[in-house]
Image (tube, rainbow over all chains, first blue to last red; front, side, top):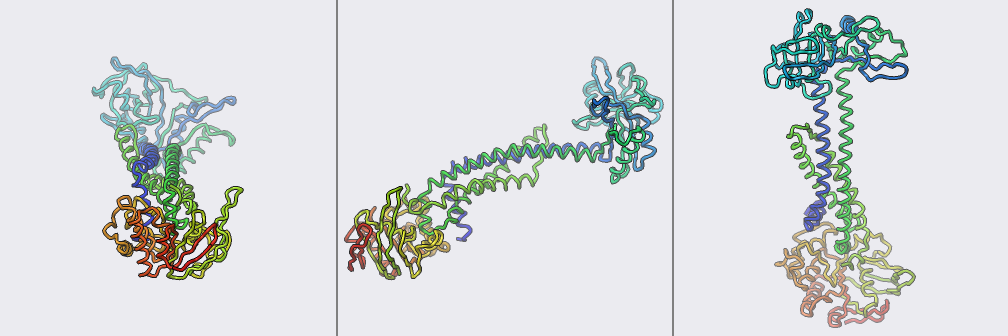
Length: 410
Length: 222
């Protein structure tokens, strides 16, 4: 037999002799590793899903929202201020380069009634460019045209959730709905974007000119028309950073902010949002993994416990081996390999179980899971590391036994 | 081959000091077969453990093949045990979950690696070729001791130490074991030291050393 093979086969014989015990010890590691894999796969899945959502909105998108304003030391929430205006949007479109389209919008919550169905919905007045800028797609019907916009036609395009709530399975195209004090005609329904913050699925889009007929669009002190947000697309994604900086400096000038004033608006590019969100979710994933790692640690303590018992039980065997010439490192090597073998096996089985669990989770459709190679490698190597770490003390104990006393033990 | 000079061994158990060996000097030639006799408590087993490098003397010098070994580290002693010393115990000390063959191979494991062919030869020498794959529990006491002898001899040791090898056997198996040992000694010229209570076994050796209270009281040449 090969020299390196002998310690392995010795460890194997040691483990199969106590099948149930080895199984239970491995189980602790299996549960730990499976927990790490499946929890981290949920985190990674969430990350992947959010990134794909953001990408579906278009990675060339930049959104400008009103920032916080401070009145007498009290700071309002972001978006609470009425600082962005139509004039800002026009100035950006004219003065900033690398911009393909600008779409200001003004949102308001309005009571919407269709037949017996009644819903308080977010109505957003937009320009015709809005659909293209925000990467929206129509499920059926059309979006309103420049001509509709100019004439202030009372037409509406519905988000998919709104359509489901108000119209159920009936075709909404051409139907009338009452919105505040005006009657609008539905001309289109949007494709669902999936659940996320500020999803267009929950919105109703009408021409901004029509919006002004039902809701008085507020004006700033300078007499400019306030908007809720401005979205725009860059023509060259490489220039996103430049465009953000240009917009910021233009708006600061336009809003007459002094050099010490904070921005009263917030420019966010999708690129930036994607990296911020994936960083946040990465932290959450790590936290989930850390919680799961605690069970791995408990499994490791189980390994140590079993190894201590095993050493005690095999004292006589250790004595015999020592009498036959085993050095200290032969003995601790043997026990260490046994411990590492237990946890390695546990790690492998744990990966399989974790994989199956995350597959089952994603097949329920509630959560997306992603098992990535780095998690698998990490979990297996951590479990082997745990075996070596927790196996060390029992193995060292075994190697230090006095051979004469060990031989005398029963 | 073996030279002991004024070897002492003191076990301290708390405050009491137990002088197990009190100045033993003796020489054993290569290829000799020597019996050590003495009443219980005379230090026979302690002497055997020292000779087998399982233990270190409190004082005195021990030359094994002209090398002073009494001051070596535990790992160096382990290496000597692995390569030069074969043990035969009263209680056999086979590993219960290994086959006879695997037990014999274990005798070579720490002496440079197993060799199945050599292990089979050793089993044949003790007449157990047909029992190679049996576990110790499936063997009689005499057969188990023969496996243990094969395990001790498989690495061609310089020195074989047997601690009452027939103590746990009926007289018929005991005689068988002794005849195997004497045959192997005669054929292979192994240096063999055995501790025994039984005079008739001791008289099959070339020399008998009598111990009492940790000292050599007499030597007789058979």
